[in-house]
Figure 1 (tube, rainbow, N blue to C red):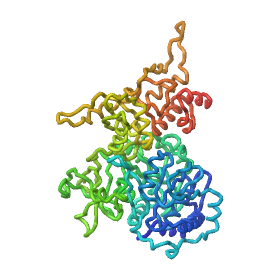
Figure 2 (figure 1 turned 90 degrees about the horizontal axis):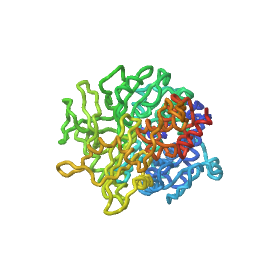
Figure 3 (figure 1 turned 90 degrees about the vertical axis):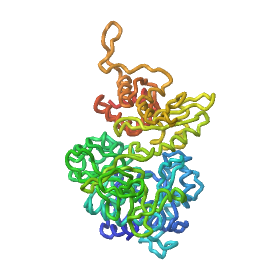
Figure 4 (figure 1 turned 135 degrees about the vertical axis):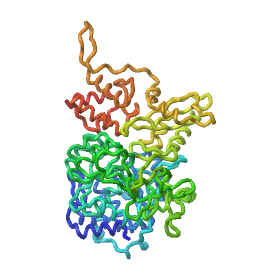
Amino acid sequence: MDTVSEFFEASVQTSGDAPAVVFGETVVGYAELNARANRLARRLIAAGVGPDSLVAVAVPRSDTLITAVLAVLKAGGAYLPLDPTYPVERLTHMVTDARAVQLLRTTSVATLDLGVPEMVLDDPDVAAECARERSDDVTADERLAPLTVDHLMYVIYTSGSTGVPKGVALTHAGMTDLVSTQTRVYGIRPGDRVLQWASFSFDAWFWDFTMALMHGATLVMAEQDDLMPGESLRGTMLKYEVDHATLPPVALSITDSAGLLPGGTLTSTGDVCTRALATEWSQGRRLFNGYGPTEVTVGTSIGGPVEGVQEAVSIGSPWDGSAVHVLDERLRDLRDGGEGELYLSGSGVARGYLHRPGLTAARFVANPFGPPGSRMYRSGDRGKRAADGELYFTGRVDDQVKVRGFRVELGEVETRLESHPAVELAVAVLGGGDASSQHIVAYVTPAGEQTMVAAQVREHARATLPEHMVPSAVVVLDRLPTLLNGKIDRKALAERASTAAAEQRAVPHCAPPPTAGTPAAGGAVSAPSLEDLLCGLVAETLDLTDVTPQDNFFELGGHSVLAAKLASRMRKELGVTVPMRSVFEAESLAELAEIMAQSR
């Protein structure tokens, strides 16, 4: 078995100056990327980074990010990905809890006072220090201690049901089987182009990273705005002639498939791939459906290629070195097609939750089907195995949900809401219909006689939760509905969630005018203004009845995927194309309408 740096260095030997990373107009070859990473790795070793040392990395999408990750791994350390857009309180918790020994960032990232030494990679002094280091591969003798496959590779923090994010600790042990599976399933060749779509804070990023750089292919990177689902994503994939992409159903649902990945491969992952999506995206390319939580090395099973219309899309069969067990409450194997909980075992199973031995013991249990001492991860997912051996995901056994492909423990959202002094009880549910419109709705009851303002409670949540976990709407109720046994009726609240956003609005607004025009003075029909048309589109996109030009799209409950959906409708229905950045930065719909007018 090999480590990440050994796999990458093998690719360098066969790829030479072939392009390793493309970022915008920047192209970095394998030999140059390797040299940069070796120089930085030696600086990290000098700073005390060695096996099982965690290095926090806060670097935006760029070839510099790839250099930083490779350098950490070459030094023998493990990387802790930080998303600079996350609230500072959450980033501080991650770095402190992980006990990181070093922070890597660039000047484009605001100074993060996280209490650890930092290297600013594009600082002239740091760059000069790196330039003085040797560029050949780091040897075992140079590291502070021997590096083995049992040492940490990365730690990724996920939502926690108790209200505290937990770090999942992955080692190099699953790398050989990960690379073997990618080779067998995808047949990746040198010169192929792999899209790097996923956020750095999620393990799907590591899948894209290895799918390109462990196989001599080219990793295609782009700015976040150029990867927004819809026309931006489509344009980027066409521009760079991408051959392989891994995308969640929410991105596929609002992106036109025509002409993309001709003869290439697409992997749907992160959420349920619906029959409709499979039917559309299996035409003209090979479509696969991947499954696996963060607690295994990126994934554990894969289905496909998907062909034709299917009643349900399977998650396939375990990949190399992995096993998926469908078990009942007594850990008996359900081989008769019965539905049970999915337990995952094999080389890719994580070491556990960082510094959380109790939680680790509860979720990583002894494996009665494997060799002595082996473990399996209790996933919390439900599924079944068909007669032909294909596996199917059927739901969850707890309150964990997927929101736009992100894993969310509703308990963490509720804990944060209940920390507001005016909130007595909080219940978070999943609202929305298709993948692109799914959102979290929170129902809260006031504590005592305190006055509660829903908007303030939502801002309280935003102070610590990442964007995908912030409720799109907070609804204040005198009391929560209950079942006969006295427990909160979550099902009733979920059914009510579709109208929650409208309930949140405290001030009545005028509904947008009909798009066909409205009678003006004297009986003439006047064409609706661009503002009116935009308000109408926003109302439909967010499923609201009342929207005004003074409203802010995101304060109404919009999020990044819905923003991409809105931009697509603006282009198709109004004939106006505006940069995605403008949609995000406009303080009101009136301001966005002005930008639209200038873009005509």
